Length: 410
Ligand code: NIG
Ligand code: FE
Image 1: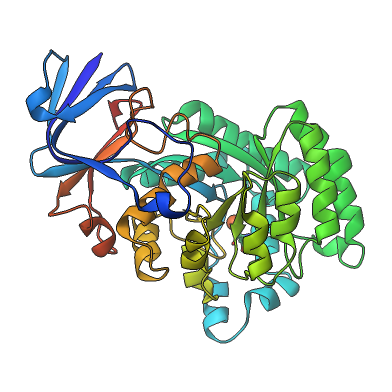
Image 2 (image 1 turned 180 degrees about the horizontal axis):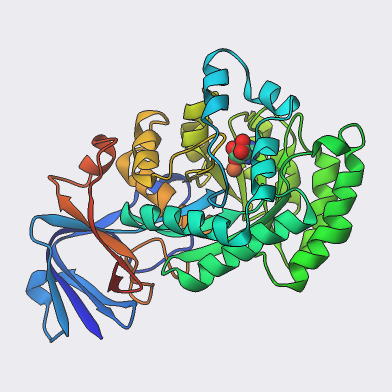
């Protein structure tokens, strides 16, 4: 099956020599083709170029006159499988409670865990499936989904089995992440090493036994898991073939970046609290620093020093953190806008941060993240827009008109 997208006003973010990620000054590089065509064959990008160079035939033609084509967003950090929204805590926060105070008295992640325990696998699946549909329609083509609202062996496995079913049934590219070390259940308060032991000795082997997780994650932060807990959990996960990703430095300069880098984490995420030592430590590593603008916005946290990191030569990725507690928005178009407005990235840098670099942060940048021959045909056609800069500029507006995943319109 050959599909031709023709008369594209601008084909954005094409790569002729694909790279796995963009770092430092490379993040400003973003190639486009004016008045372009894009040819897809059997789900894969086969060719692209100026319309005047198009020769050949296709089974289906789509006219994109006045519209632009972008590679789909990759959202490398989400907690999309959850049972309940948490707007009451949102109101508590407006009234003055902090995220940590809410967590301390059993709200927050534990509130989600209670609701998750009460929901069946099918119920969780149906809710998550509907969320995926929405995400897909606004331009996301790949996402990573974490467990972490279980916090018991049974509930964590339930969440991961839901993610496996989503992987099997959705046209989106999905990676799964085991985040058993997301919160400390009430009954383990005061002896959290027993919970860490449960994660290591019982959860990880069972998760591995069913092949449920691509990644292993720990919330390494003040009031949550320590650097020592994190090191032990990552070592155990690595033994079972799970690649580390870390929640680090959201509440405090936690040592999370350093422990992530030490264990070869594919990404360290959040990074609201970053000192020079953290930036130094990331230089020359394979670890993708990942900023979550939605969480900083929702919790009114300090902004991660994205500009400083890029100017220091680092790559930067930006993902949604879609979850009911700290980032209840699924919208990567909004993340793209925040990257420019709040973090002072240029539109080119912001696009690289939300596509190629997030693809890297979930281990799929060989197959996704840009328009390149041989990559998966995951892209969207915009509504008529005047320029590609309009994408981040017009924040809050949905600019996506049609979506193609694996070359098929969804
Ligand atoms: O990435 N920071 C830790 N975990 C999630 C929030 C979890 C929640 O509050 O439900 C995050 O922000
Ligand atoms: Fe998160």
